[in-house]
Image (cartoon, rainbow, N blue to C red; front, side, top):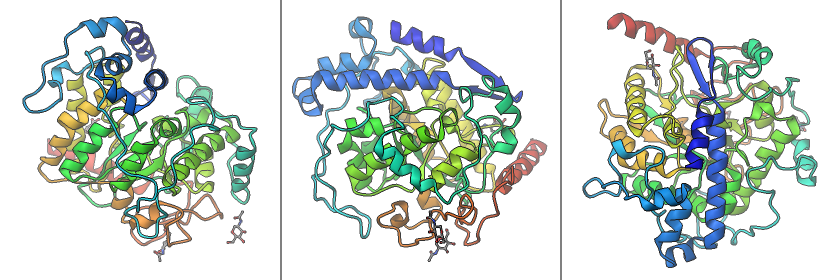
Length: 465
Ligand SMILES: *[C@@H]1O[C@H](CO)[C@@H](O)[C@H](O)[C@H]1NC(C)=O
Ligand SMILES: *[C@@H]1O[C@H](CO)[C@@H](O)[C@H](O)[C@H]1NC(C)=O
Ligand SMILES: *[C@@H]1O[C@H](CO)[C@@H](O)[C@H](O)[C@H]1NC(C)=O
C-alpha cells in the first residue's frame, strides 16, 4: 500500500529536541499534502458532493480510501452497536474506510448568520481565480503586494526563515528559540498568543485542517451534543468545500485562519507568510462574508516574526496548551491517521490531557483535526463523549468564547471594539488577551505567567503522588 508506506516512512523522521520534547514535523506535513491531494482527486473524479451521493458510495469510498484495491477488497470493520464508528482497536492507518457521508449544503446565499450585525451569506463561491491548492501562493501577485502594506507601521523582527521548521533541522535557530519566541523548540509563547482558556475547567475545543469530506460527521455530533468548537480552516480546503465552512459558521462554531497550504510558517519569507494568511483570510471572507481575527500556525510553528506578521494582518495566534514539563494538549489524532500508532493510543493521550487539565489552575485549549476519517471517527466515537462525561465537568466551548469575547469580536466586520484584536504600535503588546480586563504585559517576556503556574502545579502534583 503505497500511501501507507509513504506515511510510515515520513513518520520515522522524528527529531528529538530539548531532551524531553519529541517533535514530528514531516509526518504531519506529508500526511496533510497527501490527504489534500487524494481529496482533491476524489472531488474531481466525482464532480462534487451531489453527484457523489447520487452515484452511490462505491466510487466515493474507493477514492477516499486512498489505498487502492487492497482496501476495497477488505471487509470494513464491525461497527459499534448503534453507531457508525468502528471499535477503537480497529482505528488505525490502513483500516478499510467507509464512504464519506453524502453532503448537501444546509444554507443558501442570503441566509442570516447567528452573529449580530453580520452580513448575510454571500452568493455562491466562484471557484476559479484562486491560487493552486496546497502550494504556497505566489508572493509577487498584486493581492499579496497589497496585503504587504498592512505590515507598514508594525515592527516585524528580522528573524531569518528557519531551514525546515524543525529544531533538529536548524540548530542555529534552535539555539535562539528563546530570544525569538519560537514555539516549536521549547514551547516559547508570548503574551499575545492564546494558548489556554483563563478559567479553570474551561476547554477551548479546536479542529484544524478542514473542511474535509468527513467534517459533516463531526458537525452532526457537535450538534447532537450541543457543543460549539473552533475550526481553523485551510484555505485550499475552503475553496473545495465552501458549504461546509458555511455550516460551521452558521451553526455557531468559530472560524479562524489556518493558512492556504499548511506549511511550517517559520520556514517562509515574510511575503510568503502574508500570501498564506492573506489568501485564506480572503477565501473565508468571500465564502462567509466575514474576516476572522484569529489564526493558528500549522504544527504550532510560530516565532516573533510570524507573530508580528499575523498581528499586523489582524490575526491573533491561537496555539494549544502545554504543561511546564513539555506535555502538550495535542490529541495526536493526526499520528493515528499518519500510521504512527493505533487509535487507542490517541484515546490514552486524550485521557492524559483530561487528567492534567483537571489539575492545572487555568482552563486549556486542545488540538484535534477534522481532515481525516480516522481523526473524525476518534472524536465522534470516543473522545468527545469522554470529554463530556468527565468528572470534574469541563465546559467545552470555542476559544474566543472562553476568552470571554462576544461573538461579534471574532470577525472584523462585526467587532465593536476597534482597538481589538490589535494595535499597530508594538506588535500588539497592549492587547488584553486573557480577557481579565487588564492589558497584558509587553512582549519579550519568555515564559508567560500561566506556564510558571503550570510548573508550580506540576511540582505540587508530583509531591502529592
Ligand atoms: C497606526 O496608529 C496610529 C495611531 O493610532 C495611526 O495614526 C496610524 O495611521 C496607524 N498606522 C497604520 C499603518 O495603520
Ligand atoms: C501530563 O502531566 C504529566 C505529569 O506532569 C506529564 O508528564 C505529561 O507529559 C502530561 N501529558 C500531557 C498530554 O499533557
Ligand atoms: C476593547 O479591547 C481592548 C483590548 O482587548 C480592551 O482593553 C477594552 O476593554 C475593550 N473595550 C471594550 C469596550 O470592550
